[in-house]
Image 1 (cartoon, one colour):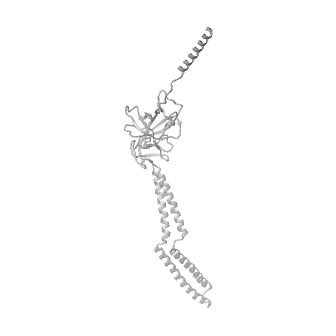
Image 2 (spheres, helix red, strand yellow):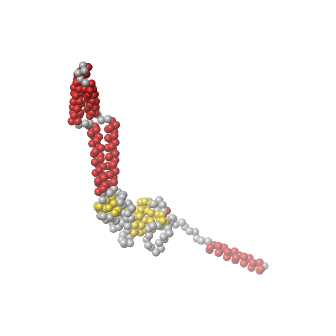
Image 3 (cartoon, rainbow, N blue to C red):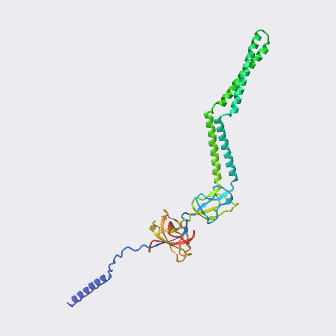
Length: 339
């Protein structure tokens, strides 16, 4: 009996110990505290204008004859920034203008016809030849009668007959000349003259286009931020440096580069704050206004010791509410969203 009692007590003790351990091992229920606050997104960037810096070069190579602006100057779209030596192109335009004037004069002369003096001269010549022909015919009639009476030689009769024939041809020619001067211009001649005018105008427009390309103009309203050429230097489309750099500074914004881990969390309209080491204590508020549709290899560096180089970034743009004190190209730190 004692043996059985000890066994039961031992089994009961083991069961109690197991239940106690199981109860203590159970974790207390965790209550849902609601969604966690989203973390802020941090990125680096730099200040730029409403447009990227626009690098401008002349369309063909030439020597700079004039710089029409200085750095920091404000310009309006279409303003001339520099002018190349354009003397050759000025002469080409002058020659083309002269060709147009000559072609137009030919058409006008064709339409107007001969001058009144020319028409009167042609008419007088026709009448004069006709009078000579009439006199020659009368003479021929007398000579022919005399020839029938053998009063003149055959040679004299033949000479008079040839004179009449010659004068008949001269009268026909004079009459044709007079009728030509009196007749209106032929339609095909007018069309040829009009085509010549159109060709001359096309050459003039080409010369004027070439002349206009000697002037480098700004495509946007903005500010000249850099000039990399001087009067007397050669400049052209293949120049290593742009001749003039322009950007729209009417509004400042920040181009930031968000690393790939945070890129999917950025959206247009998110609030952002911008700070710069050179402006301690200043915080510039803004809003994400544009997102690049793609990731690209990292090209913007902060020189931080823990910076990752082998990564991709997404470009975003932040419109600033106020930018007093910021400078184009200034490196800044950006915080997007969060508290």
